[in-house]
Length: 300
Image (cartoon, rainbow, N blue to C red):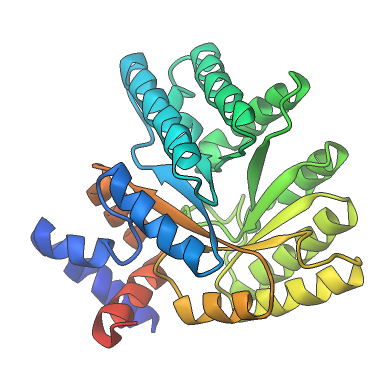
């Protein structure tokens, strides 16, 4: 399967954008806000929640960061006006993290203030290892300022994650736990599947035992089974944690989780920057390309 996935990635990059878009739209809502609204409304009708992300991280100017802030604010207004079962996901480099940390903080604070007024929630996503420390520092700063309608992400393949989780448990943080997608050196990241799985389960138990609300973000059957067992072990009910999955990936598994009565949230990205995002995701995780390719062939 790895050979097939890598072949698919190489082939996709040679295709015209119009063809690539057919692949991308399997896990991206579209280019416009109305595309995301339509998709999230459909998910909600099927008892699934959503988290919406406007594509376009790694801005290079503060003007672009301000534009990203306006786009995020628009998402929150739209969620509220359409009464969607959704929250907002953001990446800090989209709001100026690598340009001016103070400006980034003010941008994020304006977004979180609005979300709080709507009784909504903002997930601060994790990016590559160059921003891990600064992302966690920003999260801690915001929590220290009294914001409790925010969460963060931990990547299980990072060797530092156990120490990061210990800090987050002390804050009773809301944590989305995923395997990790960025290509990192072996000195700082586990590479073998069994190592990543084992660390994921260890971190999951640390978070649940520590009283954190966990978003179990995975498409891995082994880890989903482990999450069910961990929740039972720690006495958690079905509403005390949630599963999270990418739109367009393993929809059959999504349906099974919902049928069991568990909360499930689907990541719904949209925006004009769909092409670089799609190519990057295909390169970073060829397995996603394999899922998409299979989905295109089978229509599922």
